[in-house]
Image (cartoon, rainbow, N blue to C red; front, side):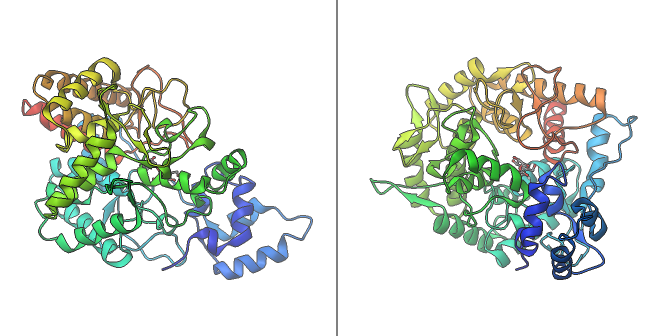
Length: 468
Ligand SMILES: OC[C@H]1O[C@H](O[C@H]2O[C@H](CO)[C@@H](O)[C@H](O)[C@H]2O)[C@H](O)[C@@H](O)[C@@H]1O
């Protein structure tokens, strides 16, 4: 397999990232060499940098083609037209470019937009919801094929199709994608292989013999290339080498980053993702086990989820820290997965829904966590399309909470619509608490486009129009 840019460009990579040639660390990772091969560039760099007139930024712009992020929008479109018309603008086919960090896939795919110029594993499920409502059947089949191809060739679906993402995956939604298109039987072999990946590389056996899973990354000893400067700085604060394992595991979770993983919500260097058994991951694997006919394994996992992750005190599901042997006691929207994927009892579902109504409901939809001061993006005051969708569906399935589900849907859609009216954009995330403010937090600027937001919007619009 081709290598990641940090490996190819050695100290040139580090120098570019640590001296902030680009304001976004991901930009250089996606840049492609022009004029010379990577080896020739590195050799030239070693000679040139000794000269007093050498300028690193000029050098990079001379020998690399820098990716661009513009999306063309037409303010005359309605929000629905915008979402549908954006699919072709977000669709890519790999044009083989030598020395690019993109992982080749055989078919076309949809990217989220902005700095996210490759597909993302869990984003794709929510994007697909909207593609189904847009009747993009060929594209949907292509995307399934790509994932099956990656499982066959790499052994798992990487976080995104970039070599620098290949050590980790993302929340395992492939089974739900195959179900969406009624093709689970066709992809049984690949689903089995994916299951083996999670059970071989991400499973933890607890004292009583229960097996639950965690997020991890096989390249855990170094900073993420796409956040090289940020991770290096965090590691200086942490004074521990396993900080990279926790940061990378956080990226695999899709919740990068969140107070959910942190001991101190104000301090990212206290992140402990790899020590935590997440409720959402284990519900997704339960669902995969059922789809693969692994009834015993699913039964055992369900029992372990109830034993380790249900809190009578909180009336909610939380994550479990297996190193500390205790629940994290963090209430987050991940606690809705057991309701959505039928892991909870009917009584637990009622309690969870009640807590959602009293603690998570805001003017713009559901808030991600109940954090007070965190500046991470997967925290309050932000709301994210995938979690709004899961929350909405979970509530719709819970007797007595259908009205609340529709309120969540209406508030989220209204927020999407208002921001769209003002900016002509669909955003990656929204501030659901102060709906006049743009969402923020995290390690990069809020992006627009945006695959999963458009997908969830079209799906909710369909429900609204059909009177659900
Ligand atoms: O560059 C930083 C991180 O960016 C990605 O994470 C965020 O965007 C993804 C695409 O929309 C989304 O799947 C994820 O939930 C977001 O937090 C990327 O997935 C990370 O691996 C990367 O380090």
